[in-house]
Length: 334
Image (cartoon, rainbow, N blue to C red; front, top):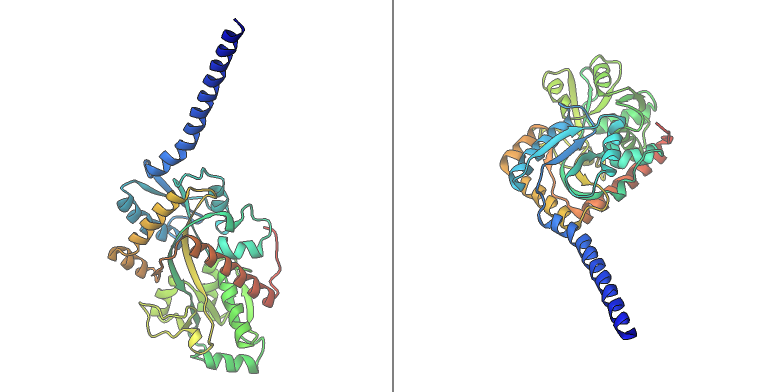
């Protein structure tokens, strides 16, 4: 009788263990099955800026091709505010399943972490998917500026410290850092004049109230119309659509400053999902139509994935920290 009770107890225990094992196996298998079936529903790419701007345009170019490659809808949406920080924070809290991505760049990934200590995310914790494109800014001057080359500007600035001025879209913006890097490497002092946005900065350079601005591709029309004069580009390579404009680095060896756009996923995204997305991005960048669309935005396709992209972001943060320290750019909460 005693033996019979013991046997029944063992059977009950084994049954419980079996149920527990199957439950655990189910939990372990779910992410694997999800990753293997990825993507099985629409993917959303968030940007931190309004529709119609550069970030939105890049997201739509890459999103359209990803949709074809992955055979799944890709939606572009926005979480606007704080220079892209709101979108980053939103995606940072999303489920790490590959269905929520964000397109980010210098501003929110490598500048804000240095300039704004209170940002609600750590850029190094995101899952890097792939670089999409890079671009140099164009150093533009007011049309009646008397100097035409980088050496002439450096020579005048050294003889007249603080006399020349450059505009930016705000303290700590990429347009500010590009100018401070130029100051540091050339050993000169061109006075920084911050504005609340690029539009007013460009307007005042056109109006002759400020000497320079480090402009994105949006200034191309003003250059071609003669309202602004292009002096040089900040990237080490010449722009495809304006090959006559020399890089600053040709006169100031080592100078290289780029805008960049890359896709990231929430922290903890499965490696297989991240790999699927990264390969799809790399394939998209090989498509001629995509290359042409990016070229029209003065952007160069750039294939950089996974650990390489993570290391790149780390190096960009270090570079920003160095520029900010040299220029005494003070960290400030938003």
